[in-house]
Length: 99
Image (cartoon, rainbow, N blue to C red; front, side, top):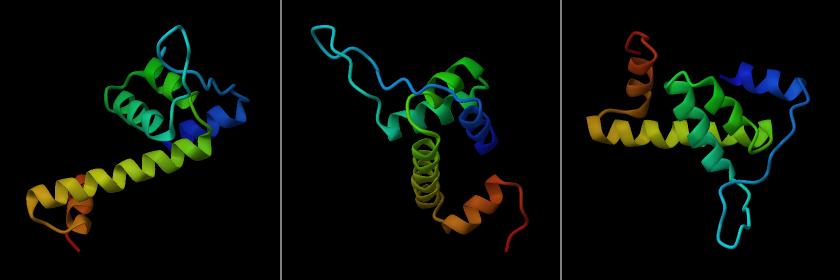
């Protein structure tokens, strides 16, 4: 995932700061959390077009931060749901043996 971000950065991709229309034809910039949510969802669905679109909404550094924040929040939510520690859930999701 981060390799895709790095490749896009090195290709000199332009950042498109505009997002969905917000009244009277005005555009608002996407924030890093919208970009991260779109990027991760597209990755999960193997949607290369969605990945490229979301990766262009913010800088690679901002996207990386947003993806990290999303991963942390998702892991905490899943750990609470399973009544397990975040470390155990993370290891299970990655197919690692119990610590």
